[in-house]
Length: 417
Image (cartoon, rainbow, N blue to C red; front, top):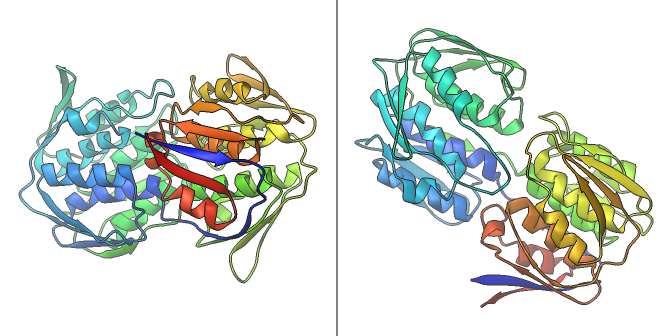
């Protein structure tokens, strides 16, 4: 098992390229099994979750080839309806197979999903919505077993703007008979990217990026060539790296408008973030100020950036409060930051950060993907040596993070234990 060893105190300066989006690539890869022709996807990151998804597609009857440099080719063959536990347990996005398999085959057997330990993320919103489209479900030995005699359009109103639920329904509705209306749909850029990909394959989707999406079902989808969006959470994480080290970074292949809420908070803290001819430039001085943050569905501040901004606030002046409204168990990284000297008080869904402390390097353990990133950020600025263990979480969502950071001056290396 690998770990990252960081000698803190280096100011980051230079250029970092942002990879393709993990959270956009995963549903698009799964949606590719619905296409009758070959699909070519560009800008796909080389990540553990991507490899897991390609293994899953192989078990479902697809052929795929990933050249390791962003290009994935997928050909759907004779599909089978079962997504087994051994793969699904490692990655929550696997539940997105439900909609496509029901739409293509009229049946699906998908293991209840796993993923990060950041609280309950029930799939009941997915199932209730698919039931409105004519599917029926049973639970048996940890599997969701679904069947239908052809999906039909429906008017679905989500109780909560669920990203996974919206994505599952977009895929299912693309091949359903008639029109489907999704109200209180998720507005995340990754949802928009999935809808745009499906449209490139011949789907008829409109309204993506708003809370009401309309889908007119079509008989079949064709193959296409499509470029996946860049990863806004990876970009936000490197913005945080520039901020916490007082650095000067240029982020290339970087989304900007999709990060409006994150950029606004960093600017409020005293970080200068602007677009220029090369990309997005991030400049930070020593005098950062804590802010108050509330995580919200898009276009609000993303829960996937909560841990990273907490790390930056630990060394900023003043105090700030973070309110986590999306997941009920997403402050586990705070305990590890406290071991490094941070002053954080947790009360339910609120975390109060008293900044202005000097972080001290220590052995720390990652509990989930974004928690891993926050501990790396803390290690970059901490005095002495930090060892971040259980970085298999990190490898699920960050492509060669140690190489990208070291290219900008960080003293960081991967060590096999």
